[in-house]
Structures are given as C-alpha cells and as structure tokens.
Length: 248
Ligand SMILES: Nc1ncnc2c1ncn2[C@@H]1O[C@H](COP(=O)(O)OP(=O)(O)O)[C@@H](O)[C@H]1O
Ligand SMILES: [Mg+2]
Image 1 (cartoon, rainbow, N blue to C red):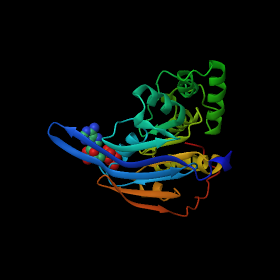
Image 2 (cartoon, helix red, strand yellow):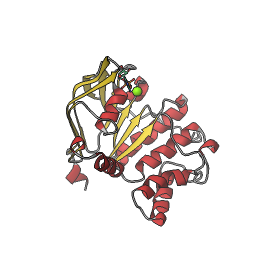
Image 3 (cartoon, rainbow, N blue to C red):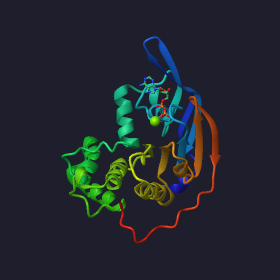
C-alpha cells in the first residue's frame, strides 16, 4: 500500500488567492499560492502573526472559500464540488487539530473521539472499538472515561489528535496545536505527531509560529504577507525521549 502511495501528490494547490473584505477594506491574505504535499509528508508552515498561516490551512482544507485558484485533495477538486459534497469529502479525508481543543465538555474522552465516526455513519460498536484503539495509540488508554475538565492540557490535546485520526484521514491539519501548552506538554504533543508521521506515514500539515516546533518537522515552509517565501527540507534529529516523565 505504501508503494502505491509513495510520492503521489495528495494535495495540489495552484494560484490560490484569498481576499478578506471588511466594509471597503480589502486584505489579500493569500496571494497566488502554489503548494504540493505528497502522501506521507509532514510539513510545518511558519511565519509571523498575520502572515496568512491560518488562512492557508482554512482555504487548502476547504473550510473557507477562495477567490481564485484551485485546490485538489486526494484527486478531488474541492471548489468544484457543492458545499455538501465538500463537507462530506472533508469528513472522510481530513482530520483537524486546533489550538483550542474544541472538545465537548460533557462527553468523556472516548465519546469525543467516536463522535465524528458516528456522524459519518460508522456503527456504534465499531466506532467505540476504533475510538478505544486510537486513544490507546496516543497514550490515553487509562483516561477514556475522563471528561476534558478532568484532564491536563496535554491530555486534552492528545484526545483531539485521537479524534482527528479516528477516521483514518488522508491528511491531518493542525493549527498551532501546541499554542495552549507549556513547553513540556508541547514537546510531548510534537513527539506524538512526529511519531504518527514517521511510523504510520500519516500526512500532516502543521501551522506554527514557534521555531522550536518548526525545527522538528522534515519540510519547512515560510510565509510572509500571504506568500510562500521559503520551502526547505531539513534533517531533524529526535530529542532524547524522557522515559521516566509521566505523559502530560
Ligand atoms: N475573517 C477575517 N476577516 C478579515 N481579515 C482577516 C480575517 N482573518 C484573517 N484576516 C487577516 O488576514 C491576514 C492573515 O491572517 P491569518 O491567516 O489569521 O494569519 P496567521 O494565522 O499567520 O496569524 C491578516 O492580515 C488578518 O488580519
Ligand atoms: Mg493563525
């Protein structure tokens, strides 16, 4: 299966333009942006605040509309589809992790993770099995009945990563996933994302303004004023794992 997907483009964006209009004021947030992401890549998008990182994520995932250009994900042109078809396509091919965890407070961890599966019609028994399996994978097998308020920030973010991965998405989008975490928990969340990419070929596009996070990702893209100004591959060295520390 890996061979079939190897080096095949998963995301192809060409000439993407996004203009926000507020009254008579126009902000060009993406200017003729081109980007190709291949299956199994992990890409960090860096740039100063206001450079267009969140807009890039929202537009290339089809969460938001674009003003010009074309975005193809897994062979489908996102903006040639109806809104309903795009939502359906997104539910089957994409997972999302945001800075604010966006967990449902009255749901347990396992209920939060299985919800998107139930929404795409997975049978309850299978949804529960998969949710437990993926929570175990992110190191939360002992927290499945906990509610978000009963977990640390690092644990909550690992629940959202489990939720993003539950449906086996082709691509995971993460916008400042460590932005609400202290540096130790941020490191553990990055360990997990890097491991999912390296060991399971999970394609991940991660937005961050933190250069320590960017330094850990094999491909680094820089944005400035709505444009890509740099795109480099870098050698990443894994930090030495701290085996004794409890997961945050
Ligand atoms: N909903 C919006 N309405 C108007 N302008 C926006 C909106 N969202 C973002 N912008 C503007 O677009 C530019 C890019 O913003 P954003 O993508 O959020 O940047 P980043 O994530 O890199 O901080 C900024 O100038 C920002 O002020
Ligand atoms: Mg942002």
